[in-house]
Amino acid sequence: MSETMLAYRLVAWGAPPELVEVPVPNPGPGQVLVRVAANGLCHSDFTMGELPREIGEALDWSMPFTLGHEVGGWIAALGAGVDGPAEGDAVALRSPTSCGSCWYCTRGQDSACSGGLVGRGYGRDGGLAEYVLVDSAGDVLALHGLDPVLAGPLTDAGATSYHAVRRALPRLTPGTTAVVIGAGGLGAFAIQFLKALSPVQVVAVDSDPARLQLAAARGADHVVSGVDRETVRTLLDLTGGGAAAVLDFVGVDATIKAGLRSLRPGGVYGLVGAGMGTYPGPWYGGMPRDAEIFTFQGSSRSDVEDVLALADSGHLTIDIERFALAEVADAYAALERGGLRGRVVVVPGG
Image 1 (cartoon, rainbow, N blue to C red):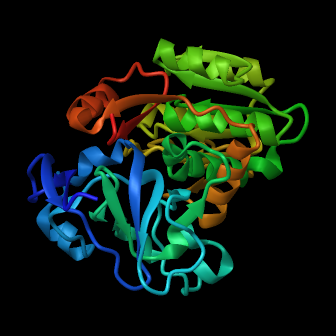
Image 2 (image 1 turned 60 degrees about the vertical axis):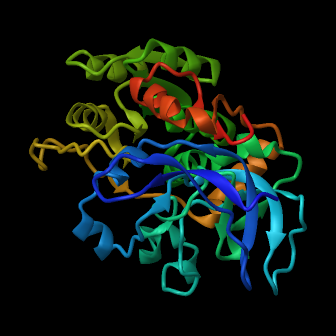
């Protein structure tokens, strides 16, 4: 093993990330060193370098740090006292961080743990490197035949989508419809989970023709282009008067408004996308009656485990666009431009 490696790091507050050479970390007691097979990119990475220093320090983020929180790879070395995985085993790394002992964690709601404000790829060294150090062996999940290059995006994009679908499942009875707004990386996973786990018709909404084509290929029964004044009318027609569930993976004003107005009484609306939208309409008379409205960030350990199991059993197609680590800036540019048919992953080995 080389003593140094390449890593894509935020090196200073307010500065763009850089591909730099850093030492390969050595695992201490209880830690695990993973050789990265691939790291999935996320839109949230764009905002991390723009975070004001005072906010980052308040979150206990350490600068500099390596980006990347969707990691699949192989065990490279084990610290003292680590049992279970063996060197060379294929693994995925749980994306969200949690303390494991608070009220939320002990009840299986670890996605709500305040410890998730800092973690691998956001305030600590992540997976956009040749190796990544894992502080807790509990974050290492064994893969049973699944390619670790494909597993990375499942740990965040896949698990977050699954968390949203799981929340909506009690409302999804035979003859109902679910609407997925935003058919990108998360939305394409959500469509597959809805079709695998419920009896509903699925309608996908997106402004990108490539994403709509992918949505149809992944099981959407109908696709709707764009969100405008006709979208609600179209969705009400397709859903027979309103959707049982609307999952919004965009989260701007237009999608929030269209999603809520397309929901039937007693339905469920999940706001997942961090588009910073608002809802300016009246609460009384402007909201669907007796509806459930929820939002969240991240996912739980059980979400990740369920998603990996679905992938292992062949119930999930994982579409990716590969880039080498040396091309990581180009990979982010492609993600920002859009028009991709899969989740962007960076492969250190090329």
